[in-house]
Length: 254
Image (cartoon, rainbow, N blue to C red; front, side, top):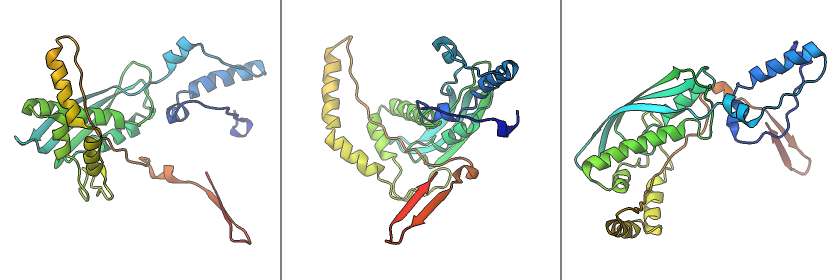
């Protein structure tokens, strides 16, 4: 079908960017276009919920293998990590999603020395695709699990371990980005105070010691999310500026 013969009308699309970005709808478009050409009439395809969920890609499942180095006082010295992403049967957005995961596997903590690798695995499940966070949530969760393991080994409160390893102003990430206007340490301290974290922690310890089957917990974590795309061409955009006689400026972009 010549491109100039194709007209696409899109109604409201719910959800976040994942359903809009993913290429998995192409095969449905191909099937519909073949039917329309064959029958010489409009064709509509409506999937029931079961088939829709069956062919829809989901968030990438991750598996990670890591080695971490730290001092007896809890200072993180090194992290060596490999992340495996289950991409399903096609590549889709698996590579840029994994790239973002590698850029966020430090979360908000200064590991001093960090080495990370990533592998997208081709498997026989439905092709996984973009979801909110675009690889950051998996990476942040992996990093938090690492810190939980360190805290458990040192018999240290996880919130204290996190606090002493937070990035500070002008620290550099493992990809050499200098953190400027970095307010996480200040936010952390203020939230610890305003939430009465340690008072509530003592109350929970007392409750747990008095209850055999019912337990309660409290935790505090932080995350960061870098803004931008993994390809420079995706930063291209157009803008139209109107300057009116009274000095008013109208900017239209998109």
